[in-house]
Image 1 (spheres, rainbow, N blue to C red):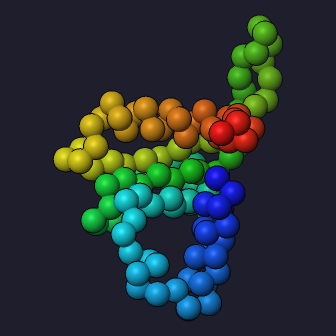
Image 2 (cartoon, one colour; image 1 turned 180 degrees about the horizontal axis):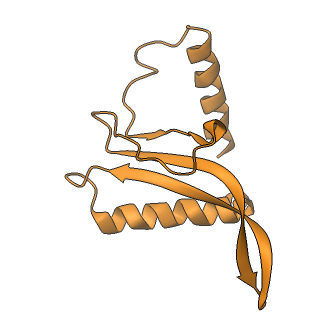
Image 3 (cartoon, helix red, strand yellow; image 1 turned 180 degrees about the vertical axis):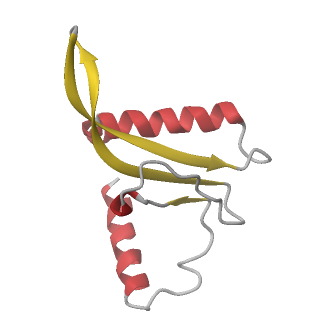
Length: 113
């Protein structure tokens, strides 16, 4: 996981500075996009061909939730996604989204691998 994070940082810096090569910027299968900083709470991301999926976290907002019979404020976020069903079965897509949800709700589980 840490090696992956370091590579993402390296590639992001190379892209921002204009030093990324064509090979470094090709071959992906999924995009992560975010309208959250623009106050977006939901959107329909469009898949970048030839990728097969795109996932977009949205703005985090406080919403009322019931916890232990009491109404409490809880931070919530919509997660938008699109999948190419010619390549990805809907059940697999739903399982992927649930895995992402679980990781976002309990990020400490990333350290268990």
